[in-house]
Image: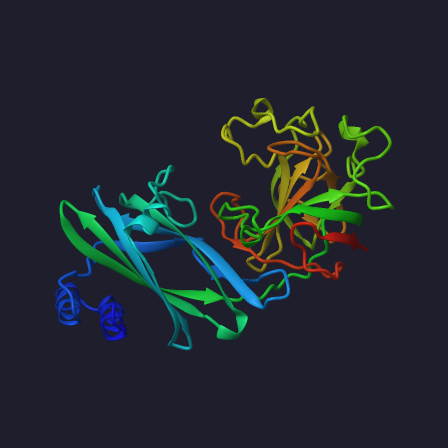
Length: 360
């Protein structure tokens, strides 16, 4: 698609329906913008993060939901994307039909508003497209124009959106949720790790002994053989406890995540087990998960101080190897909040998969 045609499509998206269709047609195609179709990103705000390694690149990911107000049999045929820096195009990307199909699913969960609440009137998500970008940091991408080609009953239409791409500015001075030596076994989505909305920048930390060993004498066959088992988990910053659970059993086999030990509301995995969510009072919430059964030391409504013990490192929920799962998120709900990139003031390293660290 010519740049002039793209600009006309994007501009037309913000003006009345009839004018949008006419301008799109005049811009070089009979493929009109359908104003009754919205493109909704999840997460709702797109944060790019620096990639590990020597090449200075940044990455971000999203699900692009096709949203309608009535049931429709829409099929995604293609996606056109322009990456922008200060309204200047830095790169254009076209995904054809076959490439788009590989990235498209019908969402398996019922449509809701971004905060997880029921919409005042029904909405529908007939399709969702997974998008991932890695760009040179020097390009300074700050937005993306997206145009999705859709087919319904033989008719082709487009839906368009302009999405900001941001660098997150963390407000809370966090410390890592345990003291001492550890290793990150899984990090965020752009590092090959967690992919869910609230956990896309999450970190899994395994405790190590003074020699940076995972196992104590015993060989690792029991939970107690793991150096991190039972280590105190602490509040990363001051705040108020808004979620707390401590009744879930630990996984008996430290090298297996057995669904029999998942909570009923997480039959397919993703169970945080025993966990705590802390509201830091500035739109940032810490979630600390996989606490040991019956080790929880706080309750909802408690005001906690940075470094205060919350419970013990365990293996409750969906977990292989006793560890702590930590994520910073935009709200209290672990399903319907956006994940936020995070750093810790007591660790010098940027934490990615395979990072050894010493939290002081």
